[in-house]
Amino acid sequence: MALTRRSFLKLALSGAGAAAISSLHPTELFTFFKPIDVENPLAAYPNRGWERVFRDLWKYDMEFSFLCAPNDTHNCLLKAHVKNNVIVRIAPSFGFSQATDVYGNRPSSRWEPRCCQKGLALVRRFYGDRRVKFPMVRKGFLEWVKAGFPREENGKPPKKYLEGRGKEPFIKISWEELFDITASAMENIARTYSGEQGKKYLQAQGYDPLMIEAMQGAGVQTLKFRGGMPPLGATRIFAQYRLANMMALLDDHIRNVGPEKAKGARGWDNYSWHTDLPPGHPMVTGQQTVDFDLVCVERAKHVVVWGMNWITTKMPDAHWLTEARLKGAKVTVIACEYSATCNKADNVLIVRPGTDPALALGFAHVILKEKRYDANYLKKYTDLPLLVRMDNLKFLKPEDIIPNYQPKPLNNYIEILKKGQSIPIQPKQARPMISEEMRKEWSDFVVWDTRKGKPQVITRDDYGKRFERKGIQPALEGTFTVTTVDGKS
Image (cartoon, rainbow, N blue to C red; front, side):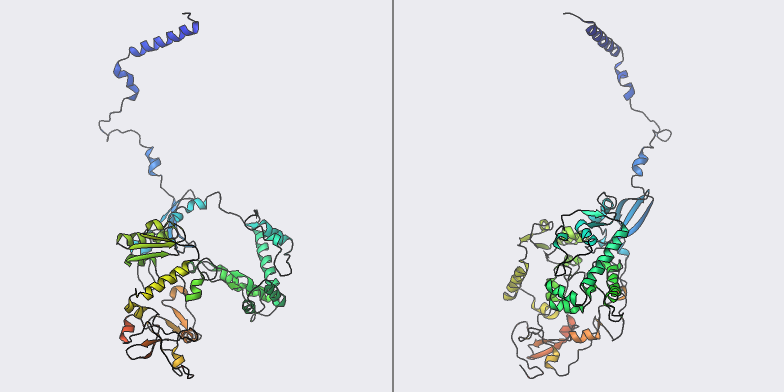
């Protein structure tokens, strides 16, 4: 075998290295890996300064409390921890159990910790690269403004300025430009729909004649402001509603009608009319869908979750559902999809969107037909015994059958305000308050007493034990004939 100079040097070096290693004692091979033996840790111990990095990982310079008040209305009281003028984390405050209401009641600590994953992750939104930190306007709308607010024969802006919604980019503008655009747009809209010409525009656009008549010629009435969900009113200032009232100044400027006849803009109801939640519910029942607090489910035997994705949208209150299940409550979820709440349910019913009313009516039919209800409870706590007129399908009122009837005093819960008496601010309203005019409009109700075989008057105060003390046995079913004050039956 031919041995080159390079090969010879490689072999020589490897042999020398092996000889050097073999000359070492076996224990000396790991001299630099030998553990340190500390006989007295109080006298000497290795440097542990590096541990400070981990011990100070959650250290902060200051903290402050704030309310997380999004559209879900939970108003969670949270704490922000600040380090180097940057919020490093958010945590629950554990302060709800220290709060009191107007009666002095204090909530249980079981409400703690009141927060959700979205609130705890707010830091990412504060400092995220997708946070909007400057005003922007849609490209087509900006072009409409710069073109001088052109309109078609029916008063609408040309379609080319509107069809880009959801497609066009947004243009960054300055705050001064934003204020100018907003003010000029509101002024143009109010002026366009004022007076007779404004009325013609709205008629051409297909608005209901009663809506147009209610405006009384004030174009500012087409401006609609929404001030946030009602529970947020205690923590926010309702600036949008104040701005709506201030539109009376603009109306006077446009129509020159004086302060007494000037009208403000429209303040949209925060629940019923802005389509965020089912408007049909208050239209039909007169009540919003806020009939009970979610904490009440822990006393329920069967929980029906319908119209709400509890686990996703009510996270601070989700533990009440969990605790109800631990106590044996059965859960049924009715939804148009397999929602996050469905996997917590014993029964899941998936329905087509828009079929909920038919399903609810079907349930009601079966419950009534098969008498699957607590008759005693219905008589004392619901409006099912109230008589309904067959000629106009309205509740039979005492004044319909009793000449010169005057509504009875209410002293159980509702407070009646005298004419001219002002309503105190919301935090000082210890109970529902209504005016005398509204009390007369409400009037009282009539049930059919099966014991005496005649109609009997009851008020809003007559429920539960108060109703029992009246000794009335109301009918839940049947058709009865009464004579009205005008002599009709």
